[in-house]
Image (cartoon, rainbow, N blue to C red; front, side, top):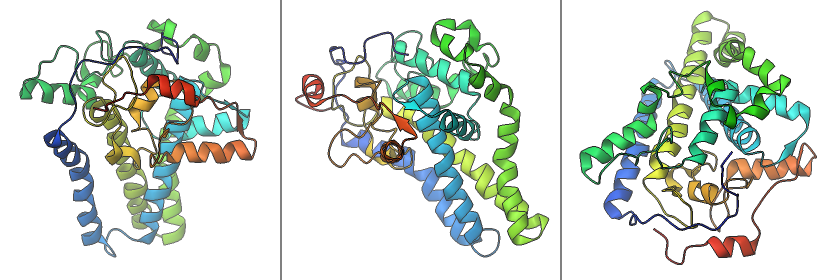
Length: 321
């Protein structure tokens, strides 16, 4: 959890705004891998990619992305709302099926990121120790996106040792339900691939159809969600608009808003880290937030935290960068 109060007014970073060149770079960085996938799907349609594969890819992507956004992030990392016990279990398992690490590890490093955002000690800042030189900026983006996994003391090298950061996870370690889900993490990883394989086998009737479904509904889906999640760390701390004051370089990026289910309204989130809804302004579509409002209506979740109009007005930047 962030060490500063959720709604405390703070000064904005001194760095300038993103220009047209940066916006183009953002589009290229985010869209090129996805655009490369679509022609592949078209070329393989009816040969090694079909309607069932597409349905599994999209449905399991959305479900596991909700597991990360609603579960790992908004519920367990920030306690942005309260949830029924059954919902907590289900959303935690869906998050684990995203194969981004056990729940406790994900949350601990995310909370550390908020406590030290874009300052020394932030696990994946693209700015700390970087200059404005193009090469240095590129290295910072690489580090924030995936390179930090392979640095000493990072998530990758600290796997199984996240309790060395007790200040960021005491509530999790005391929660037997959370720890039980964590201990079963290998099962959730296996299920993430076995589920599409089983559906493909049952519908297609052959091992080949099962493996095809596993590739698209499992491996490709995991690959896409990984890079979208990592792009929030890298792209959304480098390119986009700042609508509210925050102590870091977090930015809203509309390109990533839909595939991230609303996580890319990242400046909004860093300005109000305890808020359950990230799409605070007009035309800011927050799919996970919309799902959360629906769950509130049926009674599965409650006590959604959100800034009121006066809090948003006090923190709003007159000019957005």
